[in-house]
Length: 469
Image (cartoon, rainbow, N blue to C red; front, side, top):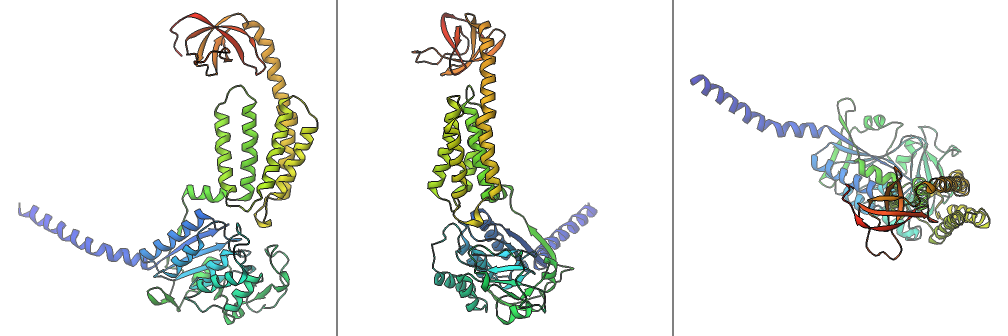
């Protein structure tokens, strides 16, 4: 018994030691951790919300620092003000890295970069052109108001206010390797259409630091981490000296959830256009088929996702209606089994509306995709669907002679359409004219013939039999 008591006492002491040491070990692990957050693409609500929560969580966990890798054309409905407030209130240093090479930070991206305790740019990085902050509201703020937002974001840092004023007016800065300040702006730099290309400048790391624009120029994230040594920053909890060892640091990449990725990806103008066009085509295909099945409900889901993607985008309601009228004209010509002026006019309106509906050049699908989509719609309505409907009509006319006058059994309720089993096969059928109630499964009916919707016209018989549906 004494051995068991000794063993139990030993286990109890070990448990107490582990309980005391675990928080300290966890804190030690967290203090060596650097969280890396990807903010790539437009700063819409899903992405901005994710980055905001991730920055707050890194601070709550006591991480050594948090790095936001930024590559964005600007904001699009995201709560960037809340993100900036979270960065300013962070108890740990917040580093923003505009990279990899060729990355950009425009619009609200400048506001996020301005709030960074340490700002790193990669070579050939375009940084500036802060107006508009939100691409979906290009006229919401005047340049002076944009400048004020940027200055407020940089309240905890010693950034150059004159640069913010120039950025709000449309100028850009391109980071280049050391010793090459003042070189000509490279031709493949991602300058937006609204940028003043003549005001674009190239600055190396020394010039960026001297002008109070950025702190580090590095080609890779690893290069940025290796430079975060003996840097004193002012956090919400006071001054902190940043010392990151890129070899021993516990670098953790914080990934978005699948749902956030889906919603963020859907905000792409290209995907929005493809979802809307493909959803509309699928819906019209189902409408021209007997009944409404899985394909129809799938089309509604695709359209719903397309509408969700389109809502925050700066688009013209008038030109959306023009494109919609074009689709309706294509469908009308198909319905009357013709291929004449409605098809030609519908194709023209669909293409014109698809091109003109996008109000911001950076947030529009590529022109070649719109051309292909318009041609595909013309081919689908003018040739493919016409061929399918003719084939269905010929097949139905040939088979209906074999079942006309025969007695069948209702398999799925006619309400007003359903299925009837007759002649060894299932047929789409419609309940008789004037019959107000649905026709239940198991009801016996007589086939009268085929109507213009390619469904059977039937007459109910008086007696019913109990046949499993």
